[in-house]
Length: 467
Image (cartoon, rainbow, N blue to C red; front, side, top):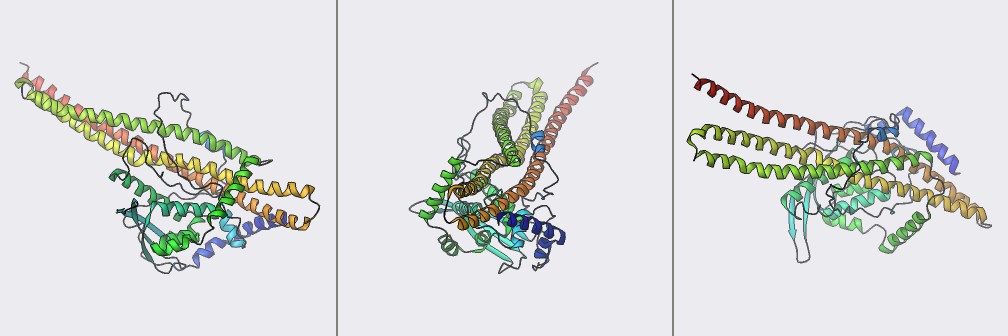
């Protein structure tokens, strides 16, 4: 039954690609004209376009990973609490209709015109007798027919985002869910609820929701829709409909037992994928540490350089013959400070968030692989029981058939989402480093122009003074 079901899934996927079932589904939904190109005047950070899942080989990632120095003794290691949801929590229910199965495994077609725009803004502090927390306004504009209105406005706190992430992992255990920012800020950087921290988290939450909105499967998740549209009391009521605490504990215990048991034979393609994830995780964590160190050193250099300009101005007051020269030096230092500050802003806006997001992605990928192994381990366990079970064989055969379909669905979803994620990762990191290279070029050009202008002016004065 399982093998027939798996073959049926593959056949359904082939027919859907030929007939364009996904395009027909979205085209059947009404679309409103005149929607903005993104958010509420804010550009969505998660607009990387999906590319064909079959166009790249997983070996490309290994070839493109930077070969960095392995010596990390001089790097400052920053502690972090990823606060990810339970990696072993997932729903046993898999798609049953041909169209839902295609949504699960088919990502390679070009996306339709964007019809869901999300903006996260206006953080607001709330102080109660029990706790202090921040809520963020979420504005959603859409032309999808399954929404009751074309625009929604709700407020959500960080715990609500954690709930959404957990529900997405539960419903789609082998899809790559976008990471959330850590629950606690990186130690030693800024204090909790500092304005910089709140703004950094707001941007990360904005990117989190927009990456989900741009995902061909996650964007149609019912819990995601509830998160965007329900008022606070409605969301609270919806949360209570999930499995109880004891049920979740039972799932966790079974999952841990399964993970300890392991899988008998992980397919070769997933062995290769797991190896690439480990390589990527090591390299991106190293890049993150180096980037943080560069920013720290740049900040110290900037703070020291800011003091030199005023010192030269004070110096000029006591040196009548050197007034113009000292003021000129002070002016050049001031321009260099401005260029350095702009460069630091580029680091915090373009490079550091992207690199750190993919540090969190590397952790997410490891969790996805564990959930895939967990599903396969459940199948292996049933097959082993069947080998020595004398009664209830028909029931076991039926369960094994369903599990075979479930494993095949999970594998296909992961393979397709892996290619999509990998291409987005290449684009994001390439763009981040290209932007930083351009910022560095502009920085040196501005500093060089200031000092060249000063030196030229002093040369002209020297020539004029000569007899």
